[in-house]
Length: 243
Image (tube, rainbow, N blue to C red; front, side, top):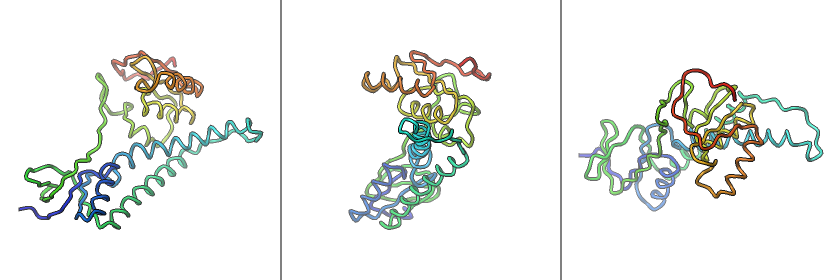
């Protein structure tokens, strides 16, 4: 027999999960959220929000560099990357704390651990068994390496890219979709030498062609070396040179 009974169990506390849980609770359902990592999920802790925090720094830096266009004289800006990191973590903590506060306000319980479907309306979390009338799967996404590569060492995914503790001298970004273009743009403006590689014939290949052209011009203006129609087949251990 299950140890606990709920009207709604939500597995995952990212934007899909926490919104569903809060709405279920507002509708009068006894609700519990199962989360194996941190409240807020991948988006708030590792992806969307860290990305926007670093991008905002790059935006401010660009505005300072272009201040002369508006008749404002300033000296060359200096990047305090430790300060960038601290602000990024502060933003994450503020938003995840807000979600935790909404859970408490709406009397939503949180169980830490990995949830598994056990059949007959039952979810198991470790040795604990939960029954529910409704089960919402909001487990989010996982990173996948390209063929011929494995994550580890200097080969990282988007989560690690936004959580760098220090700025590298050079960076190769494989994939010029929305995430890749954001990473390339942010770090190029922060002073990193960036090369952007895309297998298809243009950056942002799922967007309108005119938008792709405009974005590519903007990326190149930021000092990014862009290679489209370029398939990455291997990642040798030696440092990439000749950018």
